[in-house]
Length: 420
Image: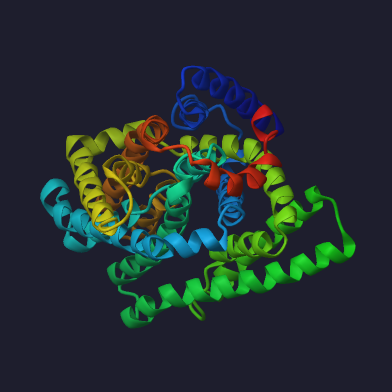
């Protein structure tokens, strides 16, 4: 397994450097490394590494969301908080409804099976979106209107909302006793409990760090470990109390940034270095799950359905930005940034198929759902990453001096991140 990890890192660094020299996002190459080394092409990766792939993806996702927390100041959230809530719920809902309604006509699924597919496809990928937004924040592009902060915060909450919706639809399909009212109430309740828990832990960590003054690297390790435990707590409490462990992780970073800004910048710098490794592993593991043969089965009908869903998401995104201070180019950027699929689709795309197989049901619908989920990754992750980078560099204005000063302190301590 160690050799497979080493090979992934070496190849990932090489393709990242090559693609970036052509101004192409490096994650595209990392995805391709996973695809070709994975079990569906060359079958070169160690089976033990593939067995723990889900845990590695989770840790990488936690690193991403921690970086979100350490980039979101209270003043920024105060400016864009309302838009964040709109963007977190409305576009995913529109996309899910469109796929639910079009699925029976394009793929021959039942309405409920199409709803399952919609709940798989409706999530945006923070693994693609957040690193790009952090780059724009460091470069102060769009900072005067807090556009990157708004997008990455909304994308993070969007995932949690869609995953909850997916569990509800799956329960309905398999005849489980699902309390719809409780599930609907559970979404905001899980967010509030997650935020409250993260704030309490963040305050406690601030006091502990000040008292014992551990090195920044040890602080990072403690925060990542606590975040993993919070996600495990979410699994334990599932069915009893709605709790969003990933939101707790974000809240930890937020409260440390508010209370101890210098400490937060040190931790954020270390997280940026951890991300160099985590990014390669995450996208390679996502790529290893991509089965091009299965995606091919979805064909033109699957691609059409994905396109219709993205059109609905894009229209809803524009509705959420009505009466905002964003110009046309900036609104177009938000719409594009809100399109890529990868992390959630790789994590739950095969779940309906496995559940149908375990229940002794016809697995045909599950195979279609998996095929379209895989196709969505292939079509939107690489193109989305490229479009975000290209369009953002073109339409996001560099913040004026009055706004730059607010970002200089946040980026100065992380200036060495890109040298890795």
